[in-house]
Amino acid sequence: MAKKQSRPAGKGTYQSKKNPIRPLMWVTVAVIALFLVIAFINKSMESKAEPIVYDEMPSLDGQPLYGESGAPVTVVEFGDYKCPSCKYWDENIFPKLKADYIDSGKVNYTFINTLFHGEESVLASLASETALAQYPEHFWDFHHALFAAQPSNQNAQWVTMDKIRELAENHIPNIDIESFMQALTDKTSQAAVNADDNLVERYKVQLTPTIMVNNVMMADPFDYDAIRAAIEERLAAIQ
Ligand code: CA
Image 1 (tube, rainbow, N blue to C red):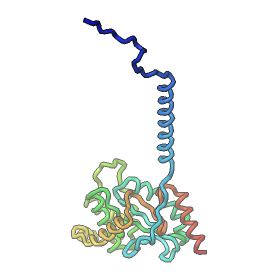
Image 2: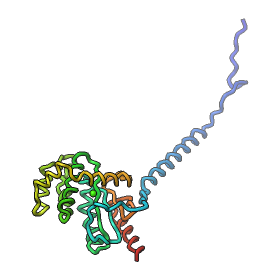
Image 3: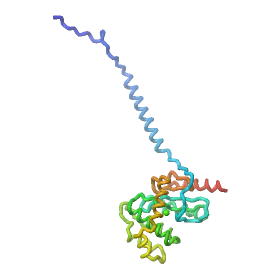
């Protein structure tokens, strides 16, 4: 029986030639690719979102207006009394806006209820709209009092009928509190809350607070320099 002979290795058989440089090349390519991906992601994160320009600003029909009604620029806040960032905006950005532009009649300001935090948002906005309907001259005191009442514990339930009663009594002089509370129970201002909700949908508001300067939705509501620049640009355009 013929003995099978193994073919000596390397003779007549195909052997892949191992090139020691090739794996190194692939590793290098992979590392470079990884760096490029990381650089791209970093750049994406760094690049600021752009403001969104709408055809027109939200309708001020039935909305509270702080400042001169004839002011050439309007700052619109889409906000929520339950939202901690909105409290921050109300207590830190609004006073600057007031001192720099509202008090001198260059800018007026409005607040549109944005119900992103459930039933407490709804109750607070109903109370706010009821205050606007019944005591428009004291609306802004009540509005700021709602934000001031927001506790630092974001999860705490605080918008209750009792809290609303207390705030209304303390911030709306000569209020007929029973009539006010009855209107709240009867949801007599529901239509105003719904109107705000429609604006939230129409302007595709995703976050609170969202700030618009006339028809321009700011990319960052806390970038006061950008808000100032947007206001100045519009003031310059009308001169
Ligand atoms: Ca409203």
